Length: 95
Image 1 (cartoon, helix red, strand yellow):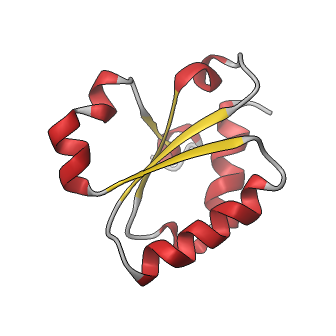
Image 2 (spheres, helix red, strand yellow; image 1 turned 45 degrees about the horizontal axis):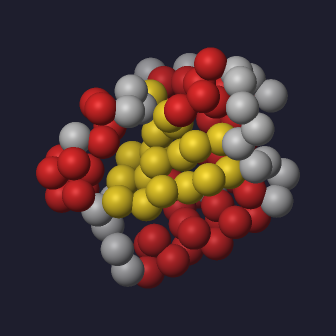
């Protein structure tokens, strides 16, 4: 699957993604490697619990490696910029 197809599948499989900022990073953006690296930035609590269950279901079809961060962690580490993360909405052509 292409990065665009993976992004579309994740977004359609995870209705709880609303309120979170999902990104893809790593070699999967270039179409190489065996795993798909996903970063999800958002709040803790029940919405995150629901999202993790949905991501686990999506991960049954895909070799996902998912990293979850609070917004403050993402800002403090600069992870999105430093790792060249691309928003799933952008990859899926929703932006």
